[in-house]
Length: 374
Image 1: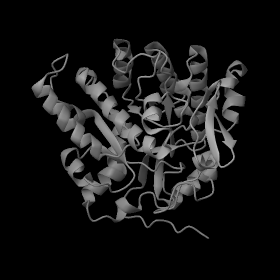
Image 2: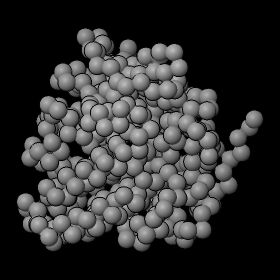
Image 3: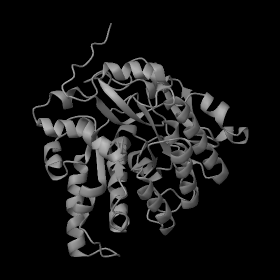
Image 4: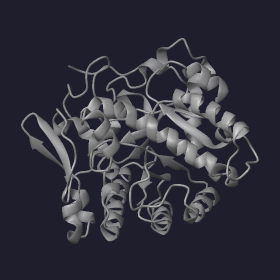
């Protein structure tokens, strides 16, 4: 059955601020040192379930097929009902799918790159990040005017992160860099003073930084597994906002955004309205208890200047969030993951009467242009 293109309702093409690739085997065979192949995250099918494995680490089981990584859902349906999209690993097919959605430009994050932070071996972790970034750079080179890579940073040390950030931006021509928000055992905290050089570099280079969570069982999440008995839906519902609330709190309460006013930071794949409530709470806590370093601006003003979130739909409270932070909310498709929608990822935002024309344009492309400086 043919897919009907969305009728454009904005004067400019939509920007997808957070789409994904699903790395092909060539990412590892062409770009990864063979010594580290055993660390590559891989799906293991077990009857009607599958789980991810990396080295000796096994994740929890999910009642689904591994192909759902590349199979977005239809609007209103459960995840996993459609066939996999070839654009997950083939940039030509991705561009065709973008045309159907009226998406002009896509900012692209990895999939298996969301799992490699669970690798504790430093050399392997760095090699895996480089392999993901090299494969992503080859993917986006198919059309660099429409496909933009965002590089994954190793979380092994601030020095490793800075070195890979420079390589991504200066050698691979990537539009920004990202890491996961968790404080993974054996790795430094996001507010570790060693990261000051990274924040300064990104601000001077006018390149953004993003925090992007993901739930796969390879990256440690023992407390969630214990609390919810490996119930994937319950863990997934909690993990994303929980980690982003803590990530935002890290960036603000330890003074990172205050010390680096030109640094732009996005908190992705969690919706927008959680930030409205947490920023109010941070303003309140600054007044009640103070922070270790007295900031020049209150948290909400720091976020209004430097912070961004992404939305995939018209969630409750979106209008209030846009009224408070009109320049901070961006559209994201999550293509081609199973919890994303295709076709029609932007339909709700295009058709809703809850947003005026100015708000719609900010969400669909203007705010992403500001964040990614494109």
